[in-house]
Image (cartoon, rainbow, N blue to C red; front, side, top):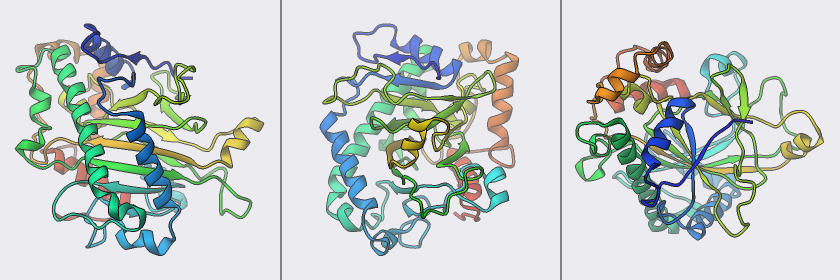
Length: 351
């Protein structure tokens, strides 16, 4: 099991910035305590999960009205069906099998994307939830700026401030269907989400009890399971701790110091309990926080980063992030995202 710390980011915790930095430089993942500091209530999280489940339960023709990458839905928003996305292109395309999941991406850019079925009347609530997620990300980015002593401390926040321009941030509903006897499932091939690192700056992941499957590639060179509830004692009527992970862009900015860790979602294997989980649906929600589309990927002004990123481990991390863009020469956050999406959907996304 992965050892991921739980951090209180409220003002009461004076060590929050340092604790976040320690976690981000260790394995790139951290749990955040669900309290007033997150600004997102348990009821709001549950409402979004209910919307997600209702949408994925809709007939295929309803979901197809807003298919991802269609002319109507835009380049990275809308619905995608089973086996559409290949998060681990090098491995998955050998077998011509995409991820064993459905997803729906929502963002607030104009023109407003079409919403079908139960999502159609829910746009204001979805937008409000997305904005709360972004506000939480800004809080975390501010803490990273303080911990890294950037000049100014708001350096990261300024590059994600939607008052200054557009971002490609998305709220994503995820549905991993449980297996039935009639499913076209290949045990040695199929994965719920292929091994990948996240494309943006940071990601917020909302999970549900009793739905495991997330794994991270540890610094020890092996896959480690991520707990759904790291405290094991969260009251049933309270939200679980939020999982936060570093994305490629934040790793790039910090010269590999903050780790954009590879992770995946699998069908549990092994004992009878794992077999039972295979048959269960898994739902999660992710908020992928992206920088302003024209934000340049240049070294962050931080003497601390300059000193700490000289290690061989940080250099390896930087080379990994550079290679993910394909050309190895990423100019803006938007350039990087387009390159990653092109590989994910196996198409050339044009501006």
